[in-house]
Length: 168
Image (cartoon, rainbow, N blue to C red):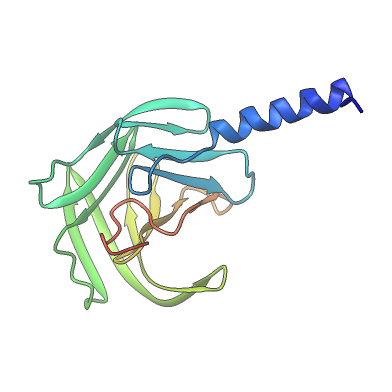
């Protein structure tokens, strides 16, 4: 019994698409998917210092291990959180590369059945942005704040950028 040509071709396209979305070893690549359009994403690869916003590839600049922050900069987007982040505080403010970051605790957030203790980390950048940061799980979501309908990019794996080494 032979496989129809259109089915074989479709399987090849699906296999190629899955290969593009394969995530390298945990802790090396982080993918944040647009919750409104699942085809759009933000990708940060800490091994290669490369990333992408949608279909635009970009270099990713990372903080050094000796720096006081865990950070990345990709195009106009900068994320930074102090390595000695005070998880007991309800509010925190810090400065990094001329950007001011303001964190506010949001206790007991449920996402897909999992409970997170997160901080909204807001920053006025080229476009205002809100990072959802969990001291254990790392960066779990990214949301633009310029317009009410700005999209949320949600982490596709259990542990995001700047997660605790014990996160699995």
